[in-house]
Length: 390
Image (cartoon, rainbow, N blue to C red):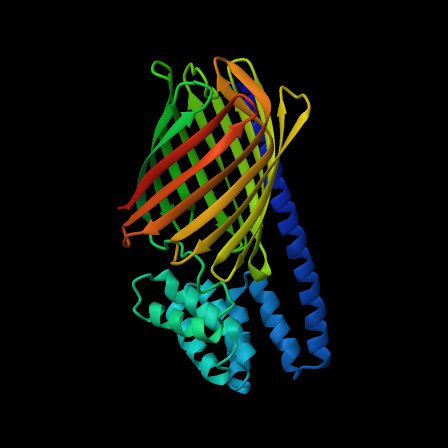
């Protein structure tokens, strides 16, 4: 536990330092550009593009009131410029003045009916209030105007604070005459748009008729500056037979243009006699109603040689968050096989999974697949979970 705690603290400290340093450098660059723009405005006081850039830079620095005043002036002087209208709507939405932002976006739509960024922001604002009757109509019209876009198909995040309880189970059948496995999980999470998601869980895992482990865990996820996200979690088991005594992970990721997302995760597991350190890099892209992803994992058992694993996945979203997916696994894996044994083995496998939103409060998840753990066993599994939004 002591070593895991030290690694956890160092990992979080490094992530926070990296983000803070990048943010400070970005703020310095913006301030320098703003000073240069102010000087140019002094020489060309009536240049609208310089004044527009000044308003943008003020907004980036968080000086919302002077930025809004500058955009108000530009909108009054140039009422047919859709870029000024869109920038003003973006600033109003960031200030929490959604009603005014939507009014500005309606005007922008009339100015440029085919301007996709205007539609995308309208959709995002209406999605904050999931019960808004305009959302479905806007989605249908966006599907006609922008059939290859992904923003109107992307899963919608719950904007109001709320609780979700998930209950699931999985059954595994093993080859080579080995006893079957089963596990049950209970997960309780609270989501809030301002702080992210906090969750806690309880696991029960059984391998064979008389071997079972219990574990509890806590975790959190959050977003900042709209495009960055990250989180951490910790799971503990008391005197386990095959689970890790402690498992800690932390990750940080970023969303990019055109549906690209990158994520980097550190995962540490301490077993009774062994420890495993894993780094996982994932790259994914959302294209229309599809998500395509690839992840590379590099694991070390007790600081030894590195085992590389690969996972490729594709999901088709046929609703806001309802989807069907396929994932393929290959390479090497470091995992507990029970009886105090943690081994590096060649693995291969395939999983088909799905999620279906029954209504606004109930969602069903299912999965089934096969996993070869070297020559030790082949594991065929099936599982199901139900999520209830309270």
